[in-house]
Image 1 (cartoon, rainbow, N blue to C red):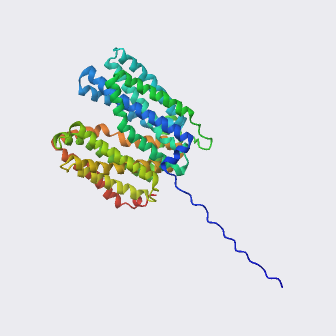
Image 2 (spheres, helix red, strand yellow):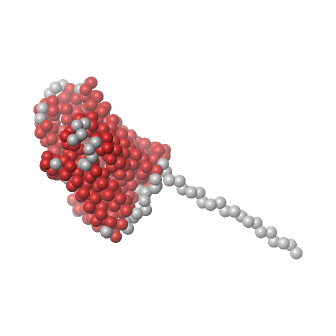
Image 3 (cartoon, rainbow, N blue to C red):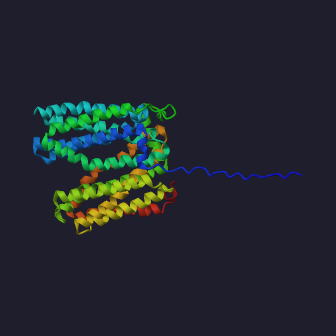
Length: 422
């Protein structure tokens, strides 16, 4: 009687999917083109930022005039941000980026010529500043919403990490290079550099492949552009996660923008006697921390409960802002600013990726425009209020700004909806 032989077959385990590292996204041609266009636009922004400040002071010698120019640029950007998001959803993020970058180059190039020929007048500066604000309102939402159409879902965190690190690098290098151009070649050549950066950036965006038909989602909402804006507002507010994120961004940035933009230079000048170099040290420390935070978030998988991350970061930011206002030494303040910057890099990577993944593709531009509006829309008010408080007591400004964020974090811990947010 023959024996039945049994053969044991070993089934190999399924291959483990390795989480992409930040640098692996550079293997994607479309991402490389997006990264190049983003880097060029950031450098162009800083070239114009430095050149505009020096030009206004050279023409008028007035800080008030410079502040007015910045307001003229900020107001249309804040007012039209949601319009820019709706247009990005309606046309496509890629086309909106191209159009806004072309307009930026077209308008800044004549300004460069006027400055180089010595014929520029203040009314032209105000006009260009307003154009910058209008163009930014369309460009920023498009740039923030295009990444999910360029990389795979699993590469959102690494992709955002690379873009955030690039942004931090340009914060350090952009003003330095812009200042060198102004000092050695002149203000007009800095504006010319801005125009060249955006013109070259347009080529990289055009070089990117168009989204596939499956990735192109129709803009949601009826009644034309106004109806789509309203639909975007309703969509964002009806989703508890997006609604909470908008509130958190508004609370943190309202306090932090005022404390850092007004309170920090006040402390450097009055308490720590560090001068401009000391102020640069603090901003540089914050930038280093933000870079490390973005790199870490690009490597470490995001937490499963996004709500707990929101709570932790509110407590993180609130504590660091509050502590900076109490410190007696600028070196200690630099350390705390670096710690605070780590949280900024983390949330800018995890948070943006979470929003991009959560948001319906047809709503990406509008949701990102609302996030930017929450971040930047209240900045003029924050500066005004912070200036009044810092005039009385700069320490009080940090206590209020940090305490406000801490209080929000503590209250958030009592909300089951926030804690369970995934």
